[in-house]
Amino acid sequence: MTKSSKTLLDRLLFHGKGILPTKRFLYIFVIWSFIVLLLSIANVRLLTIVILNIVVIFGSLVDLFFIPKRKNIVFTRELNNDFERDKAYDVRIHVENKSQQNLQFTIVDDLPQSFETDSTISGKVPGSEKETFTYQVKAPVRGDYTLEVLHVRYTSSLGLWAKQLTVPARKNVKVIPDLTEVRAYLQDAQRFLVHEGSKVKRDQVGTGEFASIRSYVIGDDPRLINWHQTAKLQEVMTNVYEPEQGKHITILIDCGRMMGVELKEGNRLERSLEAALTVAAAALQRGDYVAVLAFSKEVHTYIPPNKGIEHLQTILHEIYNLQVQPVESNYQEAFFYLENMLSKRSLLFLFSDVQTFLYNDYLLSQLVRIRQRHLFFLIGIEDEILLERVKERPDEIERAMIKSMAQYQLLSKRRDKNRWEQRGLQLVEAEEENVTATAVSYYIDLMNRGLL
Image (cartoon, rainbow, N blue to C red; front, side):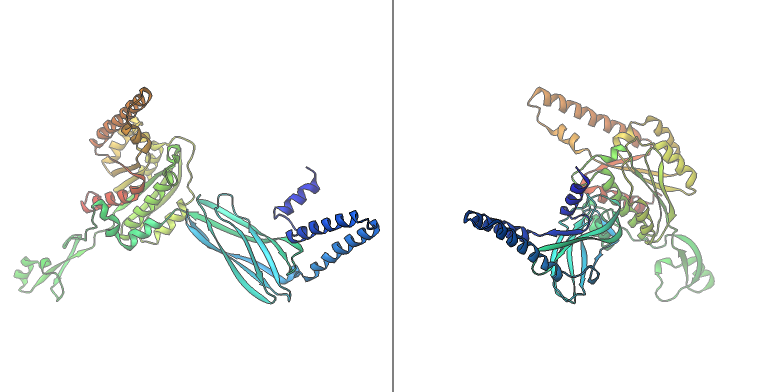
C-alpha cells in the first residue's frame, strides 16, 4: 500500500485532517452520472457534457464557503478522572460555534480498545451558540488509560463537502475496582451481612482499658459505679474506661497466575480486590489499623498500617492497577517480608487460591511459627467447574472417570484443609457472588469473639 493510499484510508476512517466529499455529494454525483449517460445516448456533444460536469463539481465547492472556519469552532471533552470497573459513565462533548454559519458535525472519540461504547456523536449547532452532547462509556479492564484526541468531521447546512480534523483533548483516566459493595457496607453494615447471619456488635459496657475513677454525674451508666470507692469516700464514684485501641489488620492479595482464572464476571483477582476493599472499609470504620500487601513471585505493593476512613483512598489508589502475573506465587517471600514489617499482633487476611496454597507443604511450618504471634485467615473462591463435575451423572465411562477424578481432588482438598485447620490456620472457600459478604462476616465474627 502506497503512502497516498494509506493517507486516504486514514481520512475515511476519521484519522488525520483534510476535505472529503460527503454521502450526500456522492448520491448527487451518481444521479448526475446517470443523467450524463442519458445525455450521451441522446448524442449531446462531448464538450457540452464536460462543461456541465465542471459546472456541477465546481458549483458544489461553493458549499465550502458556508462551512465554519476552524478557528471559530471549539470542541472539548469532559469526563470523570476515575471510572469504576464495568460501570457506565457519561462523557460530555462541548461544542461551541463562534461563526454565523450553522455547523453539522460527527465526532469519534479516541477511546482505548477495551472501552465499550458507541462513541460516534452527531449533531447540529446553530451559529453563535454552544451545546453539550453526551454519550456513555464502560471500562471493563482496570488500569491507567490516556484519551488523546477527538476525531471531528463537520459540514455546512448543505452537507456536500466535509472538513476533517483532529482536536487535541488529552485526558488521563484511572479504571478502579467496582466499589458497589464497599458503599453498601458503609451505608448499612447490618443489612449487608444479614444473609450471612453475622451481626456487628456494639462495644460492651465497661470494656477497654481502665483509666481512672471520678465522681458520678447524671447520665453515667450505673453499672460502672465503683461500690468499693463509693463506700470508702461516702460519695458515688464511677469507673472511667478508655476506648480500646484499634486492632491491626493486614490484607494480603495474591496476584499469581491462578488468580487469573476467569469467573462469570471478571476473574479471581477482580473479585478479591473488591472483597479486600470492603474488608478494609469495615476495619477502618470501626477504628482498626489496616495494612495491605500485594505479591506474586515478589512483593509488588506494601501500604503501611493506618486508621481512619480516609486511608481507604490511599489503599484504593495503590492497588487499583494490580494485574495478574504469569508466575507462581511465592508465599514464603510475602510472609518473610511481613515478619520484618509487622511490629504488633495482627490479623493476616489472605485472598488467594486455596488449592495452590495447600500444595505448598513447606509453608505450613512457616505459618505455624507466624500463628504463634499473629492470627491467620485465608479466603478463596470455589472452583465451580470442579463442583459441577462432582455433581455430574456418570452415564458414560468418560463422564464416570471425570467425576471420580473430581471427587478425588475435592476430597484431597478437604483433607488438607482439615490438616491445616488443626494447626490453628483458618481456610474458607466462598461462592463467587458471596466472597465479599463471607470475608466481611468472618472479619466481624473474629472481632466480636475478641480473638485478636
